[in-house]
Amino acid sequence: MNSRRGWMVGLVLPWLVGCSSVRLTYGQGPMLAYWWLDSYADFNSEQTPRVKAALDDWFSWHRATQLSDYAALMATAQRLAVDNVTPAQVCRFTHSAELRLSSAFDPAMAPAAEILRTLSTTQVRHLEQRFNKGNEEWQRDHLRGSAIERREAAAKRWVDRAESVYGALDDAQRKLVATGLQASPYDAKAWFEERRARQLDALRTLRQLLTDRTDQPGTEAALRAMALHLVQSPRADHRTLKERTDQAQCALIAQLHNSTSATQRQRAVKQFKSWEDDLRTLAAEATPVKGSAVLSPGGG
Image (tube, rainbow, N blue to C red; front, side, top):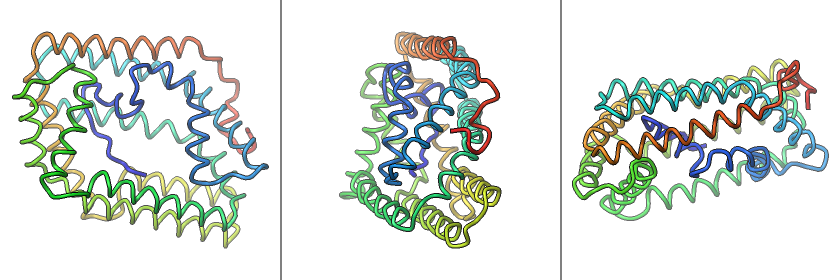
């Protein structure tokens, strides 16, 4: 549950799909989502078809109702990319993208709650073990080595994502990224502590729900609270750190974009247009949603 979104002017999309073809990734969405969820929950033979059906329903709803809006966001990115931008513009764009993403999961709450109520204590232990494994991987990627080595690794990740939009960065741009990251208030150790705290919150909630045999409305309410805490931490110190980090991130993205050449900006516009076209094609291929089975328990 690593919540480190926050890119800009369409750099949101590499964070989301990590692939040059949105259509390819999205077309495999239900299968990839099931594999990911199963790695955490270890679904049994009765849960598996229900989870797959709920995912099929959700992706059908999402394709039919959300992708045109995402395409419009990419059209906005194209308009922004041709000129210099301010940190405030970057933050507004990113916030708009995050709102779209978080709101898209609301219709999944009812079927998710229904399936969650069938989990066993063994599956919750499996989830905890999967969290621990993921934490070890995160620590290797973000907390390994000296402070200099960690900054270099962070700069490489940053540059890789930027180059997926702009093409190759020159030496001055790479230095700009490294300097900006060094000045950022981002604290990997504090981020990891928050990550772990959220996991413990989730495990406590799940165990309490199962112990109390909480009904469907109560389980949905608990899931919504958990989802809200993923967006806004209940811990004030982390909220403050995140706000400062986001502001620094927006400023660095604006600086990098404003340093780009006409050729780099043209490539960015072309990339955003490619994503927009993919999203519009996916939306056009959608099957109209009838009553949206995703919106009610038992829809799967």
